[in-house]
Image (cartoon, rainbow, N blue to C red):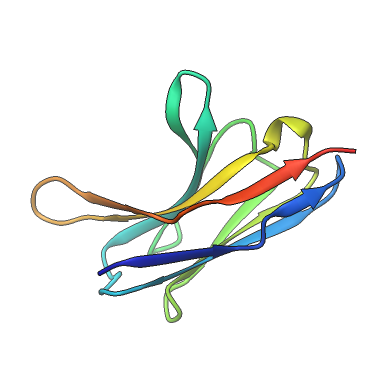
Length: 119
């Protein structure tokens, strides 16, 4: 059974930084994308950033230049470095692993970690 354990959320002032980490376990993650999502108006969750096993990244426009996603394939971890945080970044951030295979992909989710940006 896949388990995703997130850490690193908290309270930070506008302009500050946080790093989120997610450790995945329970299966092979050889053909996966890992990433972070957060709730958004009108959507269940919106993509914040994703990274493939090969290192290809994708970012939401709202976080480009401020957030950096990285992945350690040996440890099955994914980190999100968040700089220049804004109040609108306040949200619960969910770690995601998407497993690609023949047929539809499968998503696994962590429980979420709260990020609050406030003075």
